[in-house]
Image (tube, rainbow, N blue to C red; front, side, top):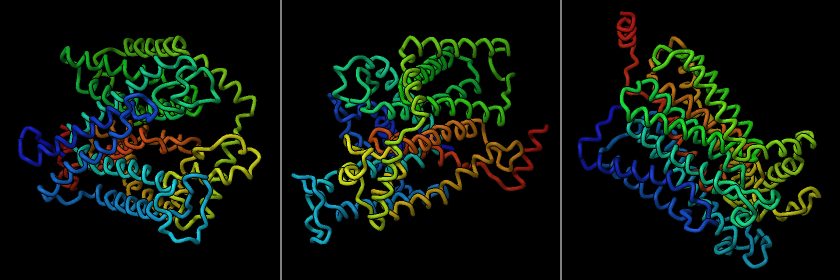
Length: 485
C-alpha cells in the first residue's frame, strides 16, 4: 500500500496519531508489571483505546471498506470481544469474595455481580479487548511502509529495554518480592514476574529487529546515518539474544535456537543471499559472523548465562519431564470439560483451579495461577466456543498467512514480492510461531504485557500478506519481460 503522510488531511492526521499512540503503547510495555513502582499497567488499555478511536474516526471519514485481509479479523475480534464480555457479565462459576468458595450454580445469576471472579474477568477482558483493538488497528497501519517501520522500531525499543533491564536487575533476593519467583531463589530477571515470560517477550522482539537490519543491508549503507542505525540495531539484536540465554527459561533457550535456524534456512531458500549486494566481501562476512558469535558467547557468559547450565542439568536428572505441568494441563482440560458450553470466564483459572488441585497429590502444594499451557487454560476459561474461535482463526487468517508464506518460499511465484515484504513475512512469522510454541508449555499469552505485543506483531504479519501491486497475467508477464531485459 502506497501512503503519503505528507498530505495533511484530517483523516491522515488521525491515522498519524493512531500510529504514534500504538508505538507509544508498545514502548511502555516493559514497565507493565503491576508490581513495579511507577507501573504503566493501567495505561496500556487507555493507549490502545485511544489509538482505536483515532483510527476508527479516520476510517469513517475516508469511508473505506475493509480490505480482504481485514474482513475475517474484524469479525473475529468482534465475536471474541462480545462473547468474552457476555460470560464476564454472567460467570458460570461464582466465587465468593470473602471465602473464595464457589457459590451454588443454581442461584440467581444476578448474584454473580460483584463476586471475585467477575472482577478478575473484567480486568482480563479489558486487556483482551485492548489487544484485539491493537490487532485491528495494526492490520491497517502496517499495510504501509511508514507504519511498518515505526512499529518495528517500537518493538525493537521494547525488547532492548527489557533485555537491558533484565541484565542489570538479575541480582539478589531483595527484588524477588516484585516478581514472586519463590522456587528460584536469589535470581530475578527483567520486568516480568516470571522468567519464562521475559524469554517469550524477547523472542517475540528480536526477529523484528533482524528485519530492520536486513532492510538496511539490502538498501545499502550509503550514509553515515544508515551505518550508525545498523550498528545500533545489531547491538540491540545481540543484547536481546544474550538476555534470552541469561534467562533460565529452558523453553526460551530452545525456541531461540529454533528461531535462528528457521531464519537461516528460510534466508538460504528464499534469497540464497545475494552477497554482491552486501557492502563487504565473503571473507569479511564470514569474519563478521564469527566475531558476532564470539561476542554473543562471551557476553552471555559474562552476564550470567552459566546459570542455565545448572538449570538444564537438574532438568536432565528428571529425564526432561515435568509431572506438575502435565497434571496442571490435565486439570485445565477437566475444568474445560465440566464447564464446556460457557467456560469459567476469562482470567478465572487461578480461583477455579484451587478447588481442583486439592484432589491431585502432585498439585496440592502451592497455588496454580496458570495451567502452563495457554491452549488448555483457554479451553477451561472459554469452553467450546473458545475452541470454535480458535478454529476460525486457523481457517481464515491462518489460511491466508500460510498461503503468503508458501508464496514467499517459492522461487518462481505469480505474486512478485518485494524484498521488504518477503523478509518481513519470514521474520515476523518466526516471532509469532515462537510464542505459539512457547504457549504449549507456558503462559505467555496470559501476560498483559505480551498480549498487546503479540497482537501488533501478528497484525503486521497479516498486513504483509496483502499487496497493492497488480497480479493480473498481463502485468506479471510485463514485469517478467522487464526483469529479463
